[in-house]
Amino acid sequence: MTLDTLENLLVERDGAIATLTINRPKVLNALNTQTIDELGRALLAIKNDDGVRAVIVTGAGEKSFVAGADINELAAQTPIGGRELARRGQRVFDLIEHLGKPVIAAINGYALGGGCELALACTVRIAVDTARLGQPEINLGIMPGYGGSQRLSRLIGRGAALELLLTGDQISAADAYRLGLVNRVVTAANLMGEARKLALMLASKAPIAVRYILDAVNRGLEMPLPEALDFEATLFGLVAATDDMREGTKAFLEKRKAEFRGK
Ligand code: CO8
Image (cartoon, rainbow, N blue to C red; front, side, top):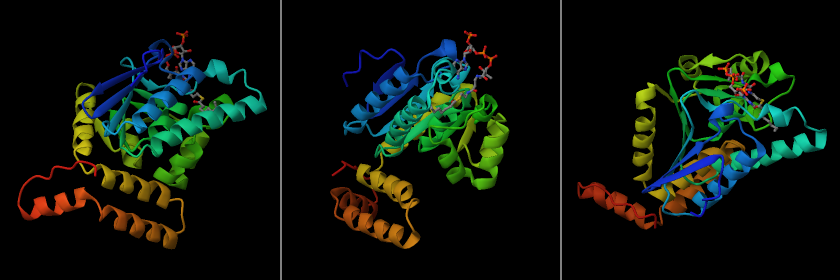
């Protein structure tokens, strides 16, 4: 990956796992345009790199995952510019959802506004027990623009989403877990270890099956059920033609661990 010119994003690669760290701790990792663009560049490189099989996204420092879009930039928006800025961020977050590999949000503190929206675009969310999550845009007289009004309601349901979106309240990691907004809650000492353990486990699975499951769920949820079931059956037909399918079934019958190669 040739990403040495990034200023606000750390990109680390450890075998099949890439870790992206939003790195503006002085402003609690708020997402300005440059950071969004850098995230987009790194994600494109990861999408095109078959060697990366799982990704972790986290925030620099101990206090914050991402405290939202950069309010300095928001304060100066025009209608046209605001729409364009929202679409730009949405395209990057869509890239996360449709990366074709699992993305784990390691939520190490505040995940507010655009930060909560970033986590929502990820495949799995693991939060530190001190994390605070929410969509406080309403308190700034605005609304979510990076997919929050759509992904939050799809993930936790209309009623709970509307309450969070309209009150702007920050909630604890424990409450986020109860709502299904995060998958797991861990201590700060265990956060990156748990994220890596899960990333390694997911990276060991058959990559084509992983990609199709992500597609079946993410795209299928946007379709009427009969079409979505047809889509699932088509993907099932395709995955049944892979070497990994032959290896997986053979390994089971031979009582050994499967070695998946993504073919
Ligand atoms: N943008 C810019 N700067 C920020 C942001 C932010 N989102 N969040 C924190 N900062 C800055 C603070 O201004 C402060 O800077 P300085 O040291 O220069 O005063 C520094 O980070 C540290 O923050 P605090 O002193 O406020 O730290 P506290 O521990 O007292 O409070 C909070 C932490 C509660 C997280 C507090 O900082 C806060 O409320 N931040 C704003 C949270 C928020 O409202 N986020 C939503 C932003 S709107 C949004 O995300 C919309 C997304 C969609 C946009 C689509 C179109 C672009």
